[in-house]
Length: 445
Image (cartoon, rainbow, N blue to C red; front, side, top):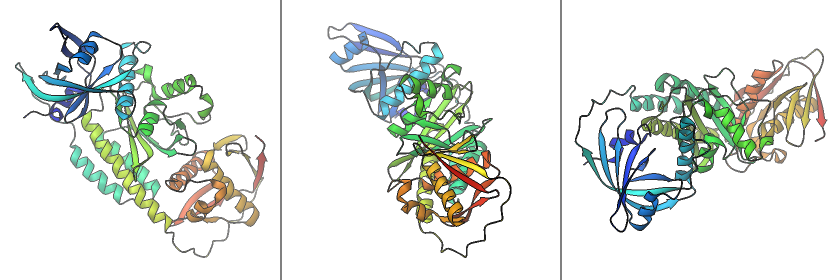
């Protein structure tokens, strides 16, 4: 018996599909639709964009027939459908909305297409239409083998920094994905911040995306993968996020000092939520200049990778909470030269090194605490535990992503400042290394 899983390529949107319905008086109606969406092994969905004859018929008579075509083999299949419901919010709706935006930009119809709902259908039968079918090409890679190797690499990671590196390395070498980034969730500020990237001229470490904006923000908000097969230059990710945020009146939420990495001409995009203990804690985002670079198999594989990242992150967080016993603190290295002026704006914990922006938010508050203790007491060694217990940092009780914030801070210092760095010295413990005198300045506003 043929299953929907076996013909998922037909639902990529590469070839328009036919949908036939019937009015109560027996009058048939046949129309082309840009894409039928695969939901699961027993359901598909159609976009509801306006009150068409097809929708009028379906509301009166919930049975339909759809013809779909495999864009690679030219195989044609006929589906017997039954309309069940219309969804106007939630993961399915938002995923279809994002895909529709990609198709709209690809066809020059961005200002015309607007999703009103997702019409969900049960598939009762699948029939292959007689005709010549081309051979199925050999897959370009073995996803199971790549997943096996990736899982082994990730489970051996001893800290969050190596988890990030191994994830991006595996995506590139095992899955052939050249452009990727990992963003973690700052639930207190309702946005995601970039902690690692690969394949871009600038790393974009510290750049931010509001939750609910763009495919990354929507994947985080809805907790569902979002894949766009036709993005085109008109849907370049960084510009799309900024434009959407400005239209929503949230331009101030974007960090102008750190540009978001992204291809100037993106053809395909896929955002997958990273889940830890049933909570979204981040997003794995990949893109390509090629149209249809990421298909259903790629999506399945990256969902599995993101799940492994989430599980490993949870294990690492539990391990970090059980810090090693402190050792004798090392004597701070002598420093000399003119003082480095570090300014902090309390309104959003923005920290500047001289006149150069470094970081803000919780990571900025952490950095300021470290510097205060260093300047007042000469301390250079700290523990994750004491940061978690410090009420001034206002970390959430659970899923605080502290390790991610420390990695973010360490990488921003590495990129922006050769005078200070953070190095791990034991499980749950780290050292602040400073090579110049520091002068702290609190700024109003």
